[in-house]
Image (cartoon, rainbow, N blue to C red; front, side):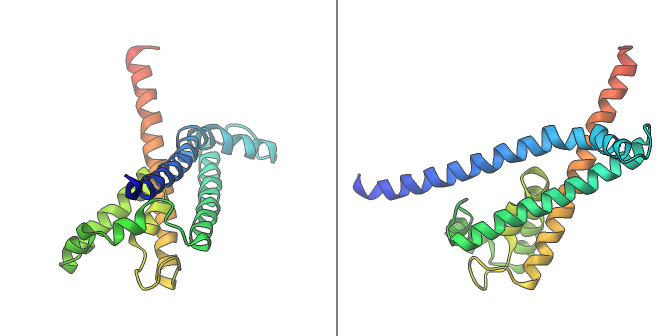
Length: 182
């Protein structure tokens, strides 16, 4: 039983870190993102003197502001993660697991799995997880030139994917409202 406690402590750290990031993600994705795309950007333009009713420009301003905020927030996360040199999310442990070694046996299979994981993690979680999951393994807790390109791509895929999902959701609500006569 004594040998299991460090493992339980590690699982508790991973769980706590995932919960903290998930709370931020939910607030960003389900509150701030819809608001900024459909109200916030237009409101900022109005305050700046561009006039009301500029919904298209407001949407793009909201998208740009959210992308910049996402970039900065995830950059802070990566810097803290690498600075602390601690596997807060279990990604390094997973990377060194027998399953990861087995999946990386074929380069084509590893690329396909890596690309799918990258897109999934970028959109449904965060650019942080997408970057950490697929960054180079040459040195732990460091970002090389290629890793920064991966990070930039993850921020773009994440924000474009989420903007598309939010837009589709809002459009579906408007269609449902018209169809139901509400």
